[in-house]
Figure 1 (cartoon, rainbow, N blue to C red):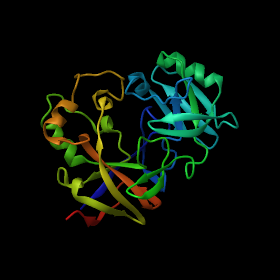
Figure 2: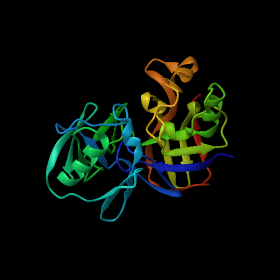
Figure 3: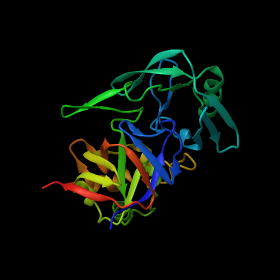
Figure 4: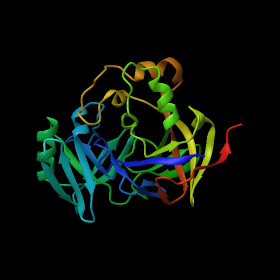
Length: 266
């Protein structure tokens, strides 16, 4: 039987994961997921691809904003910003966001070693609309799609090919499924979890972030697990692990929930 093994959000894109026992899915993605974005002073998005030190900062959302906590013990409380809207860039998309102010900009810049600012997406249902095969869908500051799903079995298979096994955190999923066969997710088209329905649209192309220890920001074994993954998961478009998904029916998902395969690829 397929079940939800773990649930994760990333309140600030590129920072440390937050693991949850339950997760509310909206059409644009998990509640509180990637609503905040670290940008350059010019508004270009920043992630662990160029700043691995971001892994050492965790973000904890609240009713009034978000609290940033660094592994050195320091923290900074950031209230939801009002006004000060500006354009920021996430890949090819220009998105409106609210600047969170100079204090948090200085705090982040000091911890990350470069000038940066923090912005907040006020209305994710309309702030960034994308299109997949003729279907428009909203998404937060996530790379492309609202949800990323991975399976425990595929990670186990990958780890048999590595001298130093890696944890699932390297792949930064939202949903982790247990009970599947390795790479079985490649054949899934539509899934049900309680009242929630997901449509898996394309595999996820992986980048250098998978080589970064999400607790320390260090790279324990340069190039891995990407090199091993490339030996058997390289297709046109990249090296693949996990599946990107659209939310067809929003709702609540909990750890331990049964996952139903509604439709498979022929």
